[in-house]
Amino acid sequence: MCGIIGIASSKPVVSNIISSLKKLEYRGYDSAGIATFSNNFIDEIKCEGRVNKLEKICSKKTFAGIVGIGHVRWATHGIPNEINAHPHSNESVSVVHNGIIENSTILKKLLEKKGYQFKSQTDTEVITALLSENLKKNTPLVAIQKTLEKLHGSYALGILFKDNPDLIVGARRGSPLAVGYGHNENYLGSDSYALKSMTNKISYLDDGEICFLTKDNAEFYNSKGTKINKKILTLSEDTENYEKGDLIRVLDENKKIIGKGLIHFNNSEVNLIKGFKSENIEVILGYRGKDEVVHRDDFVLENY
Ligand code: GLU
Image (tube, rainbow, N blue to C red):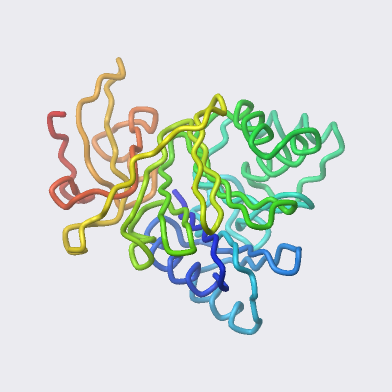
């Protein structure tokens, strides 16, 4: 489980990305990174360790970027270090990812045969490589559709495109992703807890959906590329009533829902709870009212 934040704005975004990453550290804290657009190139800072360290590195530099993405990692593929930290960028895209690409080894081999040279040990860099290949002949929407079709596993993604410096693209399958609406700013986040200091207007992406965000526009598409409308929710002002985490459904062997709960810890620890395997845990979204919160120590399946 990792944390994702994206901000498309008309003013520099680094300090708000760092503040949001601090709120997302409950999702992952072995490494952190950001990428922003400035002067037509992507400025990227990554480090092993926590967001405080990233903040110190960033404070030595001026970032003018008004569009950016950030990530806190909980490694699944490749040790926690600077190279494996997200974003994973190349000459055309920069990607942050929460989840696991199960067929990454096969995809890596195919891409290497085509001449792609991987820098990291992560499954995520496969997405970077596939996307840049698909962008050679396609629009960003078609390139991302073609890329997602090839991926097995789970993902929430935040993507910058070097040829579209105003744009952040988000996509999800199996990992939560929220869009927030601000004044002259729009946001992408793993949960609305990370966005709540900036907005209380939120939409949640459903599985298979893709969003295109600029500072003054948010467009949503289904997996077939058809434009869709999303409901905008207004979160309660009373922040005490809200908690951070992933709302999960627990399924039995026949995929029947047998419980729900809100978790605050990484997916491998979920496996330890009552012996459920990860394929029986379905993450719905990253934020819910307190009545639905079930903490680690008192995780109880409720009738659903
Ligand atoms: N699989 C990615 C990595 O290892 C993301 C990790 C996660 O979401 O836990 O970098």
